[in-house]
Length: 196
Image 1 (cartoon, helix red, strand yellow):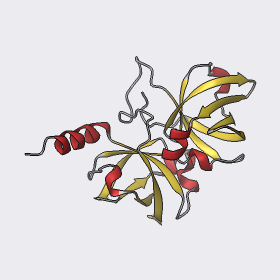
Image 2: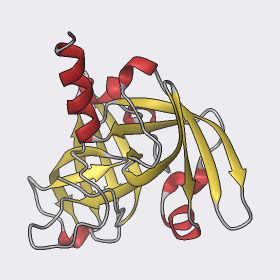
Image 3: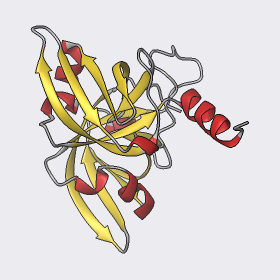
């Protein structure tokens, strides 16, 4: 389990296609603290560390992950948001994030609000639901929904998040990973399956 509070940025050093999977080699500020079999969120996708060597570590994304997320677009030189799993005795600063991406969304616009930035995204309406002032995870970042439509939502980014995650690098048309709020997902499924 994660909280959506990004610890740092990882740089993709190499990618290798292996059948329908892709293995990524990355570098990050806390590689020396990682261990094999550890869960690590990459742009909101939970991946298992399979090897570490010096400042580098490797993870593998399977076909299902590549189809559902933007990880298949990653190339050497790209930056990803990283978060280690939440310690059981730590503060819960974000919201409940499983690291199980529901879909990708497309950035429609980025508006400079003179001290913050408003980002508007579009997704398939059937992929999930957002609510105003509810939680949403975008590329692994825990955020609050500002405006909500069946196929769109917006968030406002503070300067710290803009500078310390890859959200500040996004351009209109870019794809991001979305994990809808877990409570909302269960409620939506319950009411769909229990219509009068």
